[in-house]
Image (cartoon, rainbow, N blue to C red; front, side):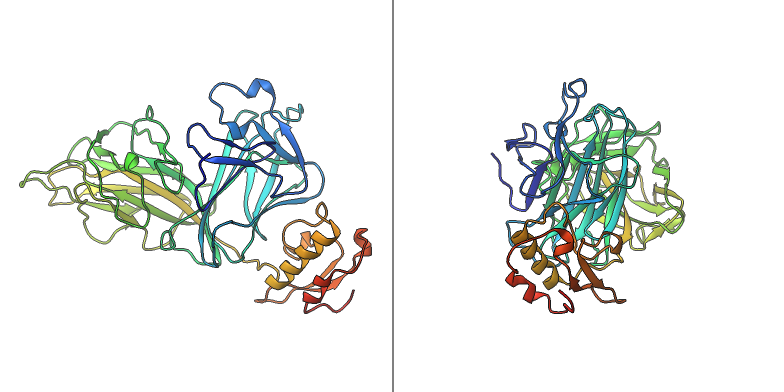
Length: 419
């Protein structure tokens, strides 16, 4: 089995560990990460062919409003570590109800996204880039009255500390990550990508053509796009052609976008040839001034200004000095989202986890003890003050039917006023 430092790969609902045949990554059952829910197999009619192994089982949550996975990495991580977090969902009629549910997904105490599936066979993948605030990470599924929440797989990957510039109070939610290669090409992830990002081939309409090289490309930046992705590119069919992409957004005009473009010249240019182009986001410069890609060397450009719009559009056009058409190797587009809700005081969290372990309150105590306020643990009273993490001020063990000797960890609840 392939163990990769910084990777946690959970096959939700599975009963055994295994190595994925394509990626070589070790997947483990979820029993060490959650103590609620039910393990289910998808219907046999949906589990066949080339279906990925981790989509064959799910963990569903018919009981409780909020159910949370708790992940503590077995490598040294500190506050400020950047993670890629990916959750995958395939309904597969696991409950024989033929009713695709809709539910919410939380990262800790903040809403990540609403999970919506098109049909029983569709696979929904959501992915974020997140900067840790706490030693322990919680991913929570919240039922909202539109069917039972479930999950197929949960994956976390540690990224370079300098990549994807975000702070503690926000995260990047993936919109698309595209490899400029014909649709017949494969999708790349680990081991091609050391961070296990998923790069899907991008089909373009008329007006462009694909180029490629077998030469080794110098990947010399913090984003580390894989060789197999950077070895291909799309270029405009003519010197004055345009490489562009646009789509309507699902969000209002306040939605903020971060865009990353990865570029490398794949053709050895003659002395009288120049490839130089401008990149625009709508009618604004994405990158100040004309850009010339370096031969067999990667440059990653990102949006200097946060972009807000109801329709997203970028275009790459040749400069006045260019003799060759514009090009693009790969790109990533994310939305930037705030995380306004603060987690409970960290000392209180650790104390309550120890108390939970002492009394076995796993099925009723999930995720953050106090936040969000609507999902505070049963038997707790919390104080909520603006700009300060919530603190536990009251603990009623009898209301939660928890019995036994008083846990010594209760003394670690420094703001406790009543017991």
